[in-house]
Image (cartoon, rainbow, N blue to C red; front, side, top):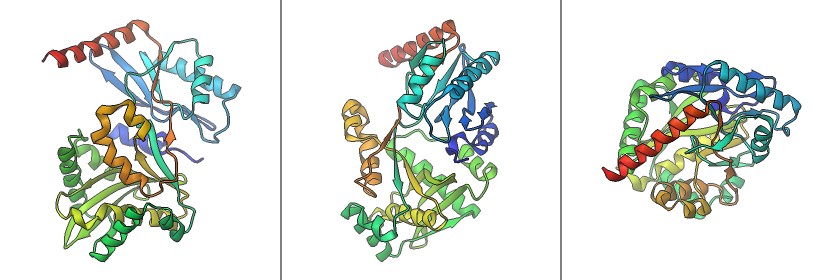
Length: 325
């Protein structure tokens, strides 16, 4: 079965290792593995990352509808206040809305990026290079010329370098990162063939490092960090390219750069221009002709109306406090 890694049993084990409860749910091609989130005063809700989904990508049918109903009943039995879903398509979202008797509303925020940038890497290396933006191709060659070396590693010193770069990058860009212990769990819990670390070294120093997931037919760039020093070496460009080459060599068909925000989405959410503009430009430079994959977003199936009303009220109260503080 070709699974989205966020719906894999390995991902559930990682979540358990970080202290969360999980609810496995798999019926044939139907996947709805969930993670339990607990909120003060409100209680528990079930979050299903990038799901429910059908791994065969067929249109929702009666079996899909039965599984949705079964999922909702199981969540009720476990005293969940709501189920937060991330359907793959609008068609699946509409099928869920028409199947359940409970109210389905747009969640207050998306849990995963609404847009991701995934490219076809079944083409030859020459074709992939030719399809890049000239500046991206130039920066890859520049990094090679300047002597940047890229390699895969599991050495403790390189894991520590990665953790340091993640922290430094988050601080520099004003992004809240996961605690160090969270990233350490990746290397402790996930299989080595699935969770892999690539680093870029320049003049004896690790200046960029990426955590990459190998699952199904897709390789996904998940987390990365770069040093503030030696930015002119263009290491992140060569690092991504070498990861793509490894994915090709091992028979994977797609490379997922993760979240982006297209021009239209940036216009809708102007406050995110600073955090997403550069990231989007960097990633899309590897295949500017490839359109992003756009998901419907996060939605909540409300199982306890009073609980959800309390959640909504507390959320608005927090917003008000921030405004007057």
